[in-house]
Image (cartoon, rainbow, N blue to C red):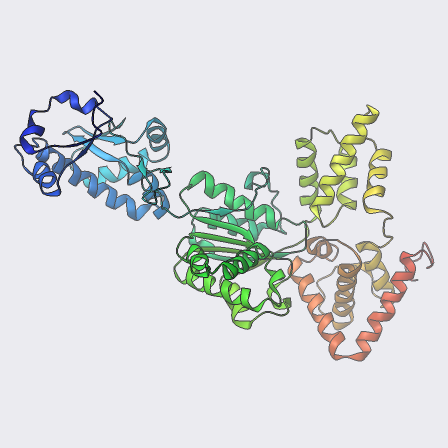
Amino acid sequence: MQPSTNVALDTASLLRLPVACNQITSLNIHLTSHFYSFFLSDPYCNPFLGTLEKSSMLWDTVKDSLHGLLPESEYGLWIKPITCLKETDTALELTCPDRFFCAWVEERYLNIIESSLGEISDAPRAIRLSVTDTPTLQLEHSGSGQLRLPGVSTGTSLIRSLHPAYTFDQFMVGESNMLARSACAAIASSDPTFGNCLFMSSDTGLGKSHLTQGVVHQVMNSSPATRMHYLTAQQFSAEMVKGIRSGTMEQFSRRFINGCDLLLVEDVHTLTGKTKTQEELNNVLDYLIKSGKRVILTSAVTPGRLKGLDEGFRSRMTAGLVTGIEAPEYETRVSIIRHKAAVNELKLSDELVNYLASHLQGDIRRTESAIIGIKAKSCLRDTLPDMELVREVLHGLIGKQSRLSGETIRDFVGCQFNVSVEELQSRSRKRAVTFPRQVAMFLTRKYTEESLADIGSLYNRDHSTVLYAIKVITRDMARKTSIKEQIKMLCAKLKRRDKGQGARGKRCF
């Protein structure tokens, strides 16, 4: 005769059950609510009630203290499920759901638990962690049968595919990207130093996606319960259109508004002209930012240059920190090349590294392609990389090199305005010196891929001075016809020089 899986028991029958019944896991015992309450609250039936209440009170106080010290996601995942088994004058015995959970808490949170207990308890007590005898994993009420860790929110994350190497550890930091990297690291760790909203812009291949995915990787490792939505603006638009067609826009909005702790949207410049999508994303951003949630947006264009955007949407996107990533300066390019070469197990001499850093500017993906190409050809020829091989790879990758460089343009402008290089590099603020200097910076930015920091170093200035010079010349060209014509004449001469039609070996051409 098969045992029944549903047994209804009265009080007398329950009290006659032997202790061994605890090991019968196939029974599903249904108790009436009034008896269940009676059994737990009556000291005669539950002799451990007084001890449990006392232990629970101390541990609850400790948990309240920890709740104020830890992020909500960490507290809910790693502290809330811990229960107090026993309290003595010398120790507090706590139980965790499983061995992995116990080891993680001991490694990451034991010190802070001991510190909080020491502040609350009159006498010093040791913390002892053990695995509970009672399973704490619970089934979702949705009926899907999916198991989840205690304390984990029922909402799900939406994450596009991640590049395994796009982590903070693999990101080379320099003057051109330091602020963006620091802000992303702070947001990933819930540090409010840089605010909870970030807008990053840069040309392609300078690290926007790397930093954004670095945030996702870190959050997944440190706070796996965080509900993240990481997608492109085009994916957001496609999901919204799908919701409109299927009549599920309410669920779509709820997923991003009520089920999101961290939103990361890339390539928001692709939303130009998409009024409905802008409106929906604007509503999402408005709720998340006001709720203190974290938001990261990226774009290939700065907010001020984005066309076809609703002004309210533009304002909402730039409600927090707005920063750009510039092309890496020479020192950072050297670090990137050495790092990429080490990852690909490629040995490059200092001469080759410096040559690559001088010729590979801007898009980091070209640097990666060059390293891979050098490695492939050196393996194919079974020889170490040399200058001839490197030049061959670069010629196939970026074609004919431009004759123009920052030094060439600096010398040319100085000759045209009869100003020496020493004067251009001096601290002089005379109009006869500052205007040629600003023109030279503007033309260098226009005709080379040198970073703002590299351009500034040619004149003993920093990148902010270069940005200001570019802004001034651009403004004056729009307002003053004479300056516009002057810049056009200089550009024409530089183009002839670049094509090899100008006089060689001369500073003025």
